[in-house]
Image: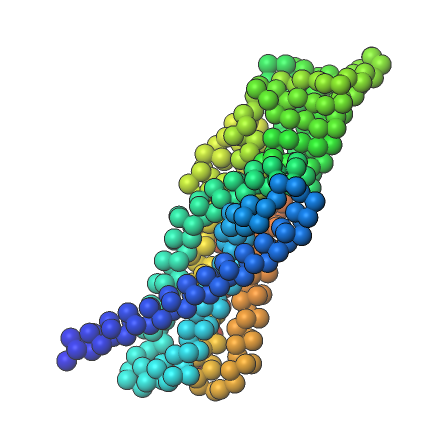
Length: 366
């Protein structure tokens, strides 16, 4: 008898896992298509003055940009996918029949949680490196298509470097071409003994072999009149790979390359905090997706017990949105150094799981 029950339970688990997985994959595919259409239209608008921008080129660029964008909305895709699966199962009374046959809520939630875990692992280990590679290629394509400003980050950047000539602190108002081109540059140069040597202001700085090539430089040194030079070379110990991995877009470093990027940044005297936070967020992604599935489960249980589809679904979406906002807020705190990267990445997911489990326990056991 127990063997038959186990067989039925196993069959039901596989069925529920297949339903949840199918719905989540469908939502992710829909998100990819929607993001592609919106991004394609936006790139068409921007490419109005670009003579070398054909429809095929714009479509190819948009295809390369889409994975990195979808990766950011993946938690919502899992939330909506799980909500859709649970609501459909409830409307068809399949979950009601399962409950009447003695299957507990935790038994039919286990396959959904397993699917969320699998999606999180695949997204971290496989999808993220692919998205990072495609984002890197997209940035290069965008730079060729729209010029240097096409892939410019307007956030001010700071670099500390060491070389045979001493140390230097570089501030740039913006960066482009994965960080190897800096705009609005100010350099504070020091001797090997740590004494201030000179201040250099330049319109742009481009990383070449073992040096920064500064254009339209104004050199202000102690005890000398300011000099204006068409070009100025500043020695550096940074390679192009180091600069790209430390100054490039956050999504440009894949999961498997993040430990190396952290080590490179530390050896170069740059802050590895951003990459440490990204690594922990990727490791915590399965837990965050599990929290989204549990939130969807609280909505589904409430639906087939009390009715009110629109209101309960809206409540689940609102709860998922709140968790997403808290995750982004913790990310900002971690990026600013106000919270440890491990806490910033894992705390929202863990709290979301615990709160959802508490609600489920209250609904199931009163």
